[in-house]
Image 1 (cartoon, one colour):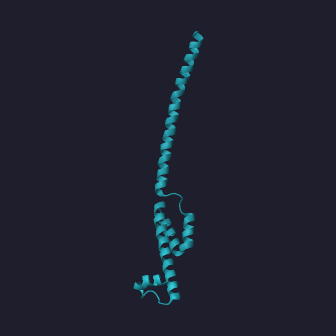
Image 2 (tube, one colour; image 1 turned 135 degrees about the horizontal axis):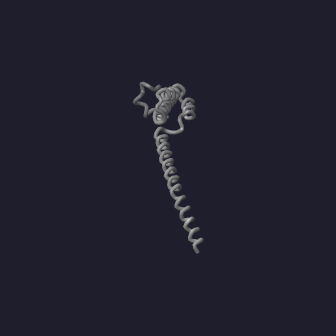
Image 3 (spheres, rainbow, N blue to C red; image 1 turned 120 degrees about the vertical axis):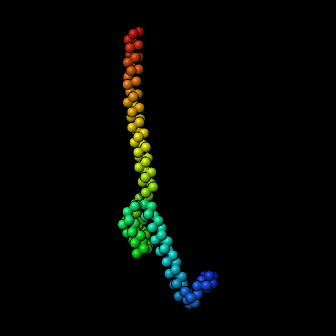
Length: 128
C-alpha cells in the first residue's frame, strides 16, 4: 500500500492520505480505467462490424451507460462477422460459383466425347 501511495504521491491533491479513503479512490480509478477500455473496445469493434450509424451509436451508448452488463449484452448482439469477413465470404462464394459453372461446362463437353468413343468401340467390335 505504501508503494502505491508513493507512486500516487505526485497526485496528492487528488488522493486522500487516509488509507481507507485512498483504497476507495484507487478502486474508483481502476473502475474508471476499465469503463474507458470497454467503451473504446466496443467502439473499435462495432466500427469494424457495421456501417449503420444508428447501430454503432446504440452499441456505444449501451456500453457507456451500463459498462459491464452493457458490454456483455453487446457481445451477445453484435454482428457475427466484420465487414472485411463478409466481403471475403462474398468473393469466395463468387469464385466457387464460377468454378462450379466451369466444371459443369467441362463435364457437358466431355460427355459427347465419351459417347463418341463408346460408339467407335461398338462399331469396331461389330466390324470384327
